[in-house]
Image (cartoon, rainbow, N blue to C red; front, side):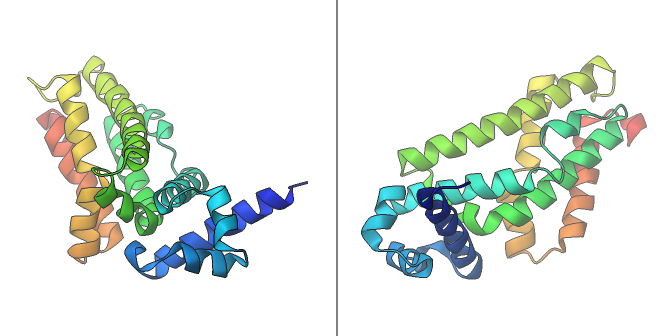
Length: 198
C-alpha cells in the first residue's frame, strides 16, 4: 500500500506531464503544478527542489511506462538485420512520441543545467550502448557495410534515431509518425548495411 508521500509524488508527476503535454514547458510554473496537484508550492519543493528536477523525473517516469512497447534491449532480440533495424525504428517512433512533450524541455536545458545534463547523458549512453551492441552483431554477421566499423555505425544509428531528428521531421516538419518510422528504417538500412541487404 502506497504512502501519502508516494501518492502525492505520483500525482505531481501526472499533473506535470499533463501540463507539459498541453503547452510548452516554459509556460508551466511550479506554482501551477502545485495547485493542480492540490498541494502548496513548498510541499512541491519537498519532492522536487527545482523545475528541472521535476522535468527530469517526468521524463524518467514516461520512459519507464512506455519503454515496454518495444524496449531498447529488445532491438537486439532478432536474427535478421532488417528485423533488428525495424524494431529500432519502431522503438524510436513510439518512444519519442510519448517522451517528446516532456523531453523537449531537456533538449534546451541540458547545456546549462548539471541535473538535466547528467540525466540526458545517462539516457544517451544507454541508447548508444544498445546501438553499439546492434552494430557489433551486424559486423560479426557480415551485414555491416564494407569499411564501416561498429563504433562509427553505432554513432550513425544513434544520430538518426535521436530526438532531435524526430523533432525536426515530425514536430517541425509535420511528418506522419508512421512515415517517420518507415523512412528511419529505410535510411538506417542504407547507411549501415551492406548493399545486398538493402
